Length: 231
Image (cartoon, rainbow, N blue to C red; front, side):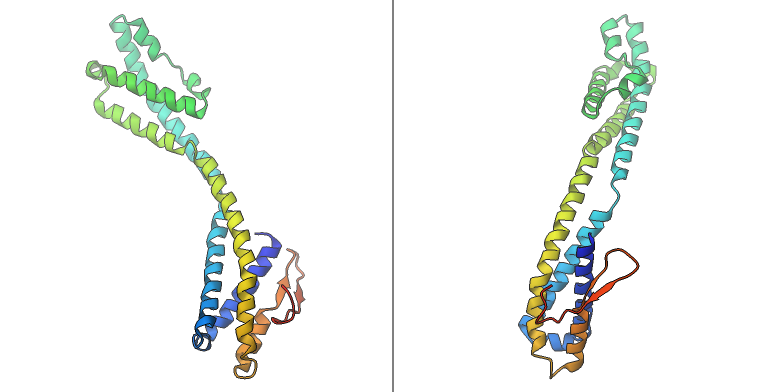
């Protein structure tokens, strides 16, 4: 959040605290309680969106890189014996089907790599019945396929993480804009309690002071009465 949003949220939470402390009074008027509940919901939405907004997204890219490495290593372990099988039966076409070097995998883009790994898996499956003597069992292929699937699922993870963070930033802004209308509703209810609930009224007015914090050690308090000053 930016400084403006932080300041608005801090004020809203201060108001929320006062309302919670005087819930017995708030709950006597249905519309008053409804306004208070609406403020609670906005604050909860902001806190939830902020958690996504400030979250680190570098882990997604690292997870994808690790998944690719694991899948490539599994592929290399499998294609070696299959190439030996192809040479033994004199099938050069089959040999070339599996003729990948470790560096050749690294040159492939994400989608190309996923497709290549799937092709290798399919070609192994087509010859699995003849590969037991070469140390390859059906379980090995199953494990390889699981690694491919895990990598495939992570291909779009970094972009998805960025999209979620952008959406969270937008949601924070929208929710912050919703604070003022709710506070204006609450101001109306509090105006009627200036005499009957003096302590509550005074605490509310104090909470409604907007403190402008510009991110520096010094802060500036703006006198901000609920019924006369626009926030």
